[in-house]
Length: 204
Image 1: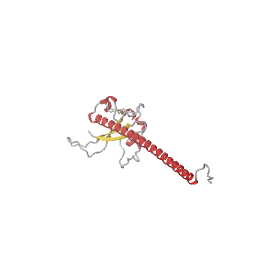
Image 2: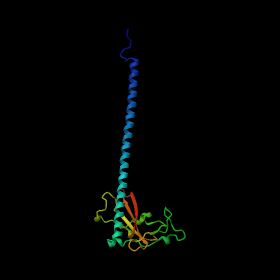
Image 3: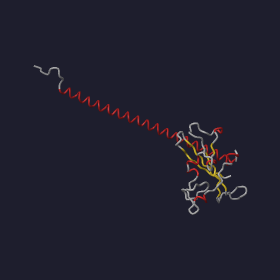
Image 4: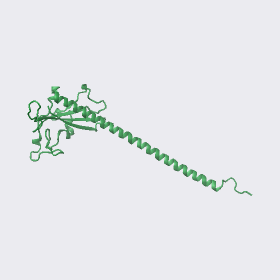
């Protein structure tokens, strides 16, 4: 006589329990993979945004550098050319121990009391300050078509007249060119906190 009634066999109940455990493990694994994939996508998106931000800042600095190099070479517009900084502060900063750059060369041009060059002092780029050296900063005019729409601020540059002995000679007169010009440009990215500084030297 069969006394099992309506209960399923023990083997069948165990099989159902195994299936439930396996299903729960699969759900957990799929959930973890989904979360990992979402985090990877967010990271990639953030990385792409940072790269774009830096690229905009670099392009803005490069445009500012080329614009101000053109001002030095042509001398025009005269109003911008005359903003050139012509004071050599290297002898004033620390005569006993002249400040040196990363290559061991003596720093020339604008230097503050701590021996920092113009571009090393963020507040020097603030054109709202009506005093040197801030008044020597050139903000690239939007009318020249060299400003970037994505940039948080217009490119800026600073031109210094540097006087030092040079082996470079004028091809026509043969005389040594002791004066050259250092151009420093500051570009801002999409974020105001992303900035790139570029420098070049120009000899006429």
